Each structure stands twice: as structure tokens, then as C-alpha cells.
Length: 437
Image 1 (tube, rainbow, N blue to C red):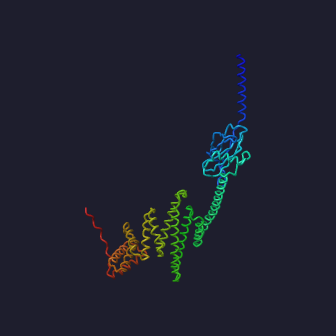
Image 2: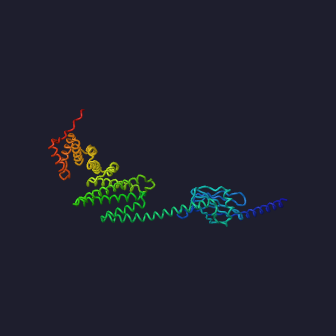
Image 3: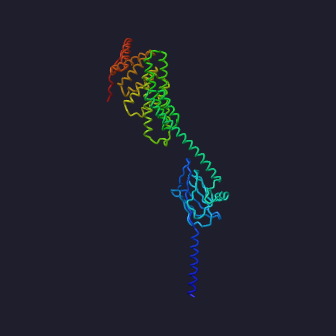
């Protein structure tokens, strides 16, 4: 009896074992890769995408898988003879699916496009797959989701292609313009230099990486042309030409500083992400402010001052003084605005500006003579002897501290002589009274 039962047990065990072997032999894994088609046409593996596996004959599914860093996924133990649908979704991509998958398939490639990261519900995947019975491993292209994704992809691709084409064209223009502009500057052909720098700027007028540079270089060319025009007019004997030249000098200086201001505005409006090289950005800003200060100085030297130039100086000079670390340069630039007022005949504004400089630099010869001449001018206009006396005092101090080479020393001495004839004698300021303990 025991032997019979044991024999039956062995037979049953053998049948079970054979059955197990048969089942194992009929299941196979599948594997593949998920890739996204980028806007520029290149393909990249999609890491972290969710891959779901649904049976098509009944409503059942395998545990979902996720792609690795290389975009790879795999499922183990899929029954031979059964058909599956693979559904893919993930951040930054449009959902997609692949029907007619069978156990044992390898190197499956599922293509997706950039999208909103949405996921297709299982019922929608099944419905879409049934609507189009594709060949095994074929990616369907006629679902609404895929049509939408494809349309978005094509639009994005076209946009990128147009941007790339524009960028290539801009790069060609800017590279050529900067080269030809420099060559023109080296030969003092300022008209051509200005035209080339204008062309380079116009190629990409909002790009913080190039637009301020072109405006800076163009401004330098404008100032150089202004100086050349002024020097030629000084030698000219044609009165009509002198007047015309004065207008051209003013316009060139105005064009220069307006360009500098525009460049600074472009910098101020730039997003941090658009400034990869902060050191170069800051250096360009400093060059713009120093070049603006130089243009204002040239306006004073040539005495070609315009109200519009003064308006810009009132904005840009304080900005320059706020970042300049060189004390001597700051002191010199502080005199520019009062000098402009003096040349324009705005004596009260000029006097206020000169006195502000004298508060920190009481022996500054340029501030002394500027204040003196402005006070004398205002005194004669208003018949104000107090202003004449104050002006004479400043002029006398100027004559005592200024070098003989100062261009206004002779003029100041002549003014003092004339004031004495009008019974206005300079008075030397006494020492400041001692403070009581």
C-alpha cells in the first residue's frame, strides 16, 4: 500500500514538475527604449518615463516599469501568445503607446515628442489601439494625442530652425561689422565706422551680449568725428562753415551719449540668465559711463553744449560718480555739469555746482575760476554788486593758485582789472573763526 501511494506521489510530482517547466518555457521578457525627438531633430533617451503594459484580450496589466537613465525599460514573464499594449508617459513629453507587443520582443523603440507630461488613461489607450490595428511593433500615428503632439513638434521645430537661421545670420553680420568697424576706426574713417557699428547693433538690438558693445564703439566714433570736425573748423576762415560745423559737433556728441544711455538701459533690462559673464558685463558698463563722461568733457572743451546734452549729463554723471573709485577722475567729472551751465549762460546753476566742488576741494582752480566768472556774469546782468564782489574774490584766489599755463588765467586777470576800475576790489577771505570750547 505504501509503495503504491509513494509511486502515485512520485507520478503526481513529476506531472506537476513537467507542468511547471512547460509554463516557464512559454513566458518571455520584453525590453526596449523610450526616446524623445527634440525640436532640433535630434533624439534623446527619456529617463524616468512610466511604461505601462496592458493585455489586449482581457482587462489586465503587468506591474508598471520606469525607464533608467538611458531610457531603457523591461518586463519579465510575458506569456507567449498573448498580446500587449505599452503605454508611455512622463514629465516634459506627450503620451504615446505601442500596440501588438508579444513576449520575447527586444530592442523595442518607442518614440515620443515634447509635451505637457500628461498621461493617457488605460481605457483611452485601449480604445485608440483598437481603432488602429498596427503591425507588431509599429507606432500608431493617427491618434488625436499623437496628431496634437506631432503638430506641436513640427511648430516647435520650425521655430527653432528659424531661430537658428536668424542666429547664424546675426552672427555673420555682427562678426563682420565689428571687424570692418575697427578697420575704419584705425584709418580714421569715422563715417564708415559709424555705419558699420550701426549695422552690427541693428542685427540684434536687444541682445545684451553685443548691442551695448556696438553702441559703445559707435559712440566713440561719433566723439572722434566731433573732435575732427571741431579742429577743422578752428582753422577754417569760412564763417558759414564754422556755424555748420558747430551744429555737427553738437549732434555727434549728442548721438554718442544717447547711444551710451541706450546701452545702459539694455543692460538694466537684461535678465540674470542673459548675463553669463558678469565681469565682462560690469566692465562694459564702466566703459559706457567713462565714455559718456569723456563725451560731456569734449562738449565743454569745444563749447558745443546743447540742452539735450545737459539733460543726459544730469542723469549719467551722477551714475558715473557713484561707481568711479578714482578720486582725481571723480573730481574732474564733477566740474563738467557746472561748466556746461556756465557755457549756456545758466549762471545760478553753474555757481551752485562749482560751490559744491569747492566744499571738498577749496583750492580747485577750475571750480574757483568757474564760480568767479559765473558770479561776475550774474552780477552784471542783475546789477548786483554783492555778486560782483564775491566773483572778484573767487577770481583773485584762482589767480593766486592756478598755474600760469591755465587757459583762463589771463582772462581772469583781465576781469579783475576791469572790476577794480568799477571799484570792485577783491578781498582775501580771512581764516575761519575758531569754535568756542
